Image (cartoon, rainbow, N blue to C red; front, side, top):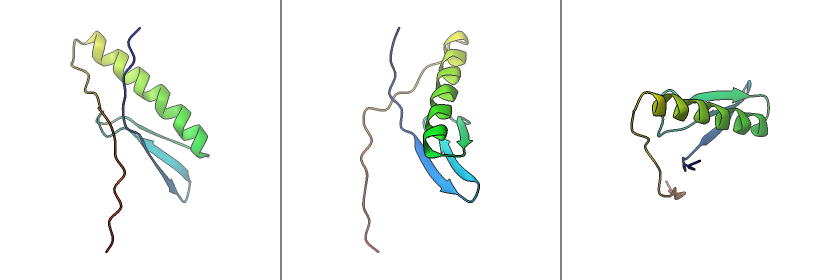
Length: 72
């Protein structure tokens, strides 16, 4: 079994939390808590990857993600 590394963005909104994976277009979910959103995006990414592998598509990977602070 191969492991993949992806970045995940989790944002708080008025209804709870939303999560998405920038490398995988259309791969997003939400949850009532940050933990729930994180669990659900992990499942969504897994399903997305399985579908791409079955279709013979390339799997993009992220080497690393660096936070960036910008002063304005």
